[in-house]
Length: 289
Image (cartoon, rainbow, N blue to C red; front, side):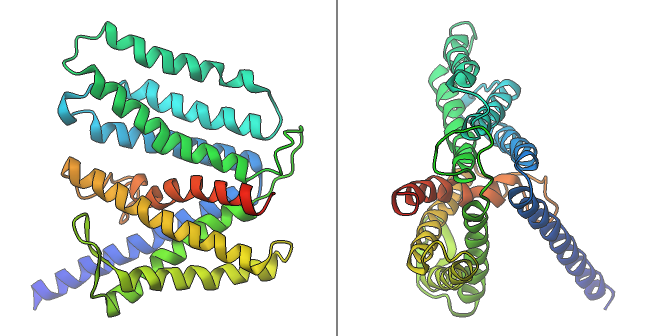
């Protein structure tokens, strides 16, 4: 009896921790996207740096890789900040010159480090820049107007906010429907728990949510919102599978422990990091043009 009580107490404690962390996490992200561009810069600049720090921490011992973890994480955070300044018209393309110098440094420094496999170091470093910093940096262009790059560019949070909400609704629907009805495996080799029933359940949740955006923001047609939701769900699912593949390759369960009850930042942003580039392409092709 005592063991049963202790077990249930632990489960309840974990549930409370996970719930509180989730509420704070969502509140911080939504407020950063919606309320003010400088708040967005600070929050997502930190997130970019921390996701890179987490990623490089995971891969630095894989295949004898030797990663310059601090400077590489700072370089990615700089790329996000530079893209923010450029997208909002505060500076011109010269803002990216220090980042180009960082990339040059990344290549040249391997000539002087006595490591066994420089190609691994280059590959992991540059992959992290693309995977984490590149994806988050594109949010800056989604958050601004049609690309005039004029100083004082309007802060337009709705599409970026939609990406995150579609991802969250997809995760919720996929979990609920997959748990109740999931039978046919979506991608068993990489993620045995995912099912086609869960995928279409998450897609349905996201599509319904898209029509709420269409009602609040009628300037963009309901069909266009549906297309954005479909894009986010498909590429977000691939993003989830990509991170699962990374963790399976590295032999780990969670990417980190920075979020109590939720694992690491990569675990929470894996879908967003693949959905964002696809959503940016969709927005440029079908909404802004």
